[in-house]
Length: 218
Image (cartoon, rainbow, N blue to C red; front, top):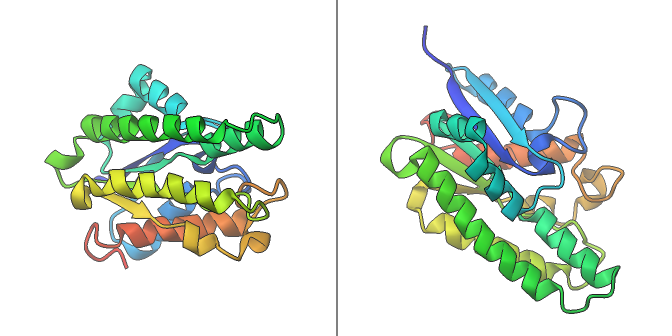
């Protein structure tokens, strides 16, 4: 019997599935989409942690042997990161009044994201074998805040730049455009995380990014 494709999901509350019913988060939906279009089965492991920043996800990857083994053995790794860095910096600025918190927070994110993706690629041996990492960009969790687009664009440019440095081995699932103007329909009651419909959109973005791998995804 052919072994199933292995997928390891790394990241924050989006990976965990916050906002969707149990087992309806985007990672589970990606698995369902795969099974509906591929003769090969897929099995996933989910290492999403609610509230995790990029630096915290990196620390976990460096210290957690089970996570490292799951990444190393996976055919596909997904990564969600950046949203909590943005939210924490924005909270300090707009709620706690730390008016200069955004730039340092975003610089810290940029350094941590580069290191996190580099470590994922090294552990996964992405460049040495027929495997892929899929990273999601960030949708805008604060569409009502005028300055949010500026910082979202900073985060996403960082994601695009780092992914591009690995050629076609690190793929970007572009969620920003998929959510733009549809937030009222795609956000859960907390106004930040995707609802079940939003998680399906995330999954479809990941599926689109993965469409060349393996051939015949679509």
